[in-house]
Each structure stands twice: as structure tokens, then as C-alpha cells.
Length: 178
Image (cartoon, rainbow, N blue to C red; front, side):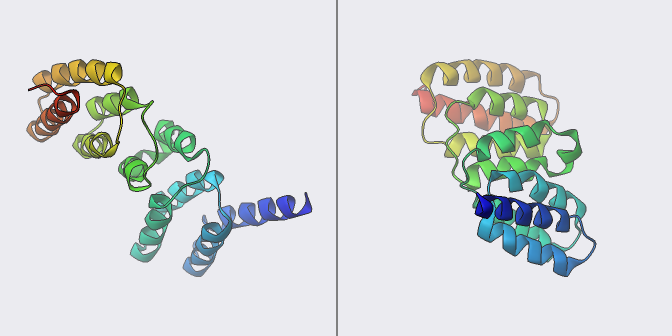
């Protein structure tokens, strides 16, 4: 129990250090999080990513996020997508899902909705998530195909429309539709 409390306190100190203006403190905190972090680290890492302009720190944070294997990481990442204070890092959040290789088979509808409602960059990240997930339930894929096909027809941004059309092709391929 004492070890857990100590570890929790150390993580809380590391999370607070992420908000520092001192790059050395931030880098030290990132090392601690890399060694002892769990899914609770995701939101503080994303907040720090949104605050920093230092490329070295940005790269270190995205590297940690892209390797996340913590239990509950998927839920933490979905919660982060809903957080209006993290809008500037939404593409990184979406990229984390596929870079970390998380099992998302029960969440196709969420990625389709994000692809349709988001900007072109977010749409592209959702396409990548959908393409990289090994298994999608057939019923979910059929519903997604219908929704994306409709959205692609009415999309006015030519670049995003092309991405949505690629998403249609990816879903058709998964379903064996020619």
C-alpha cells in the first residue's frame, strides 16, 4: 500500500511538473512518467503537448503516447477527444489510437462520426485508424459504410471529400463490396 501511495504521489508531482515553464523539469517529469506512468498520464501529457512549443518536448510526449499500452488507455483517449481544452491536439489523440495498436473493434461508429464531423486532418487520422484496425464487426462496418457514403456526397471541402471517399473504399474492401 505504501508503495502505491508513493508511486501515486510521484506521478502527481510529475504531472504538475509537466505544466512548468522549465524545460528541464518537464523532461525529468517525462522520464518519470515513462518509467512509472499509467493511463492517468494521458491527459496531463496531452495538456503539456498543447502548451509547449519546444520540438524536443513535443517529440518526447508523442513518442510516449504512441507507445501507450496501459490498461484503460482507450477510455482515457476517448475522454480526451471530448475535452474542449484539448482541441488543438485532437489529431495527435487520434494518431495515438493507431500508433499504439489499441484494440478498437467496438468503436467504429465513433471514428466514423469523428471523420465526418472533424476537419480534414482529423478525418485523415480516422481513416488511418479504420484502415489499421484488424477486425471490424460486419454490422458496424455496413452501417459505417452507409453513413460515410452519404457524408462524402455532401462534403464541400474537396480534400476532406477525397478522404471520405477513401474511407468508403476501405470499408467496401473490408466488406468484400466491389
